[in-house]
Image (cartoon, rainbow, N blue to C red; front, side):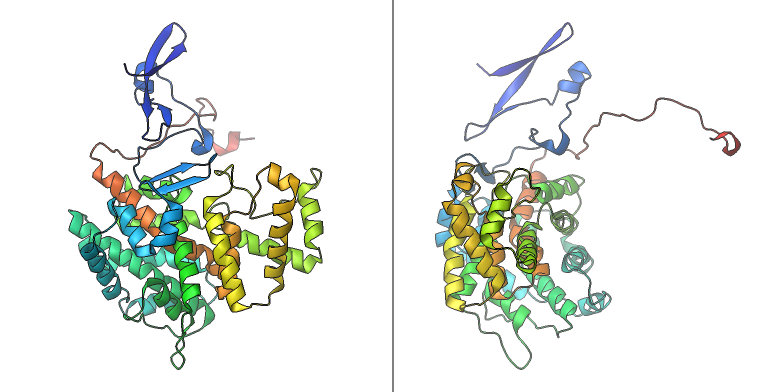
Length: 429
């Protein structure tokens, strides 16, 4: 017998179906609520609203679980690559050898940008935010690939996905070079995905950047761990834009814009900015911990705790090992990193943090790793966007494939003035 929930409104009772997910998650289906009662639900920020059914990512925040297509993130981080993970997210299964080879080759041949893109980059001020350039340039890709604006079959989707995933790193690297006044470095077809990105970021025409395997591995790990995270703000944005049947370039560009917000993709930037403030403010890590514990002090320690994970963020547990290895390998002497490591040490031993499960989160460790590698703070959110691109594409595709999906059109509770007349200028107070 199907499970239902009963809603009573006045003298009316209606049965609402209970939907159960594959991991036992339950939700009340209110699809027919307005039609049967005239009522809508009010749920600011959609904290209690399921906007879709999805087979892509599963999260259990209480238990610290994150899985892509059913595979634990720990297994993917240990055994997979970013490109293999991207295929898994988009197409639902780990790729066969020939599929991965074909997809990798497509990424290689599509890494370059049309030469006319240089003129677009040159139109930006030197101090233009890299995220602004990234969003604009992903949208601009649609002008150069008009044959991919209409996804008619799996082959076109694969080609479109390969171009976006490949070119987003080139656009990101060019954005950095433009903002730094440095010459653009062309992609090297002999290098793998992450190594090629670092080459375009840090090489010079007369001096090629040699990628350390541990650094390449750490950045590959960051991208995998950020590849999808259920219906977050940017992913929901991609779905909303895509629901109008907007093309994948436009939808991904909108995702970048949503990610730009400091409450979303800017979290690891906030960690480094706070470390700067602590350093210049002359506070010791011990004093910072005391401030964070003082309920009368508005100070909030960034990079600890997570809205979704009420236990240890599984991504942070993985990145901690990588961060320790990268810092030891590079031998970086940076006061901000010293402060971060001391804060981590103190928090993990402090009963206040342990009892409240305020462990370092993924933003804490990803920020530390990227700073140690030499990636500028204003590029942190760009790195997040590169990593999240496969998840955005996967969600766009899932919605596109669902022939029952409709254009997103939320309702509202109107709280403005009631009916009133227009007043001529001479009668207005």
